[in-house]
Length: 332
Image (cartoon, rainbow, N blue to C red; front, side, top):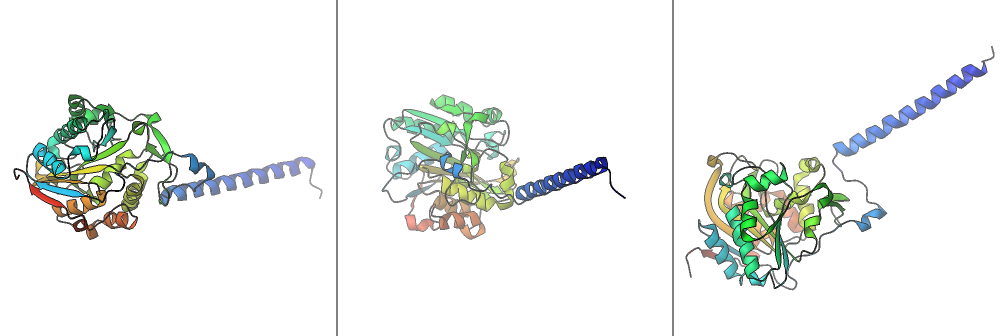
């Protein structure tokens, strides 16, 4: 029995719709798989034009470290920097300095979840005393950025010392590709605060962290990421390694005056803190974190990102190789 033209047309339309539906399901499944596995998008020829951070480290200088024990942050940071030749060894006349703090949570400084405002104020003043032309402070907090800077006391500290707070906006981010990175391929990174910057300083507290084991100077760079950065939590050590490859700071300051021993990174109780009374200043963030791990009763082997960052060439996990200067506040 011959099929009418109308029935044939209907069948063809049905087949076309079926093919399109199958293709849509396959595409959706592929996208879902890519998201579920948290892999970055494929590299493209357009990646060559993405944003990248310059190298802010001091050229032709061996890595250095000073560790000072004492309960007074102002005394320990000044003593540590004096032992390394003063802030003038790192910040010169006319420099534009960006300070990356940890302002991740809208909590008071007494809880130790963020950079301490007194330390920030001291470092800003030391930068200006060394001849800095301008100092800015930035982070991309988990909570509302403006609220975090205010409630942590960091905004007031910055204003008091004459620095500008660079609160991120949607337009502040640009895609970044880090050569050799696993995840930082065409990923949005905080770019706007870096315009014109010639020196970069990281200020971070020592904290326990439920995913990475610890949050210190290398984890602090996580606050430069935009986008849905929570997708990296399944391989937190991998993204911290990528960040160590991306950021080459002038100096890092790791504040272990009050260390968050448990319930990190947010804490929430004074019982989470321990007075470890230690200030670590270094040009090598990997070494700084390796020493900071000891304040938490851990070793670099307990924190895979430290060993992976060292293997990637971001620094050394053996801080003894730096012959760190060990001092106590009050000593001459």
